[in-house]
Image 1 (spheres, rainbow, N blue to C red):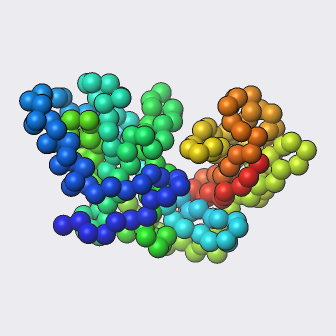
Image 2 (cartoon, rainbow, N blue to C red):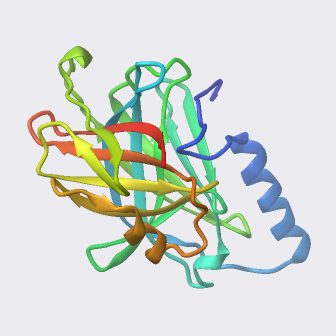
Length: 235
């Protein structure tokens, strides 16, 4: 029985009970007498990220999970993604209105960058199940194993940010980084070199973005094989 509910704010959507969500969808399906073909999970990506809040100087660990999925009824038929660790009795829910969609390797990936434990500590190693449900309650399932090594958080070198003369620069020993731009929700990521990224380029790519927006900086630590995220910062 799943008992513990993990944190899900800002970088991932609000949680809802797994059994209730799937049960309600199945009941709706039975009531209509319709049949539906289930979705399919084609690929799964997962990665540990460490997220530093520069204002609070606090570091939390978050798990990024994204899938490439196919649904015979179309992508709009997909309703929710569930992540479950049965042994640790942890589960998370990401509804379709809140998950991220990104293009990569010729496919569209859906998921979240922010699965975390209630206290922001390390997620347990072991097997995780990924369930993808459609509007009628049909599901697809895939699994992956999380096998992370202990990381000394004091040794992590996070990418910072500075804005001067209309240009965002990423501080730290990184030749290339990413900036994740948010309004109320995630908008787009931008590649940033040591010469910086002009704010005018962001506004040109996102014409409806307000003059004041929120962003995070991101790099991949290849030695530890983890992502390093810093923010939020304000333009």
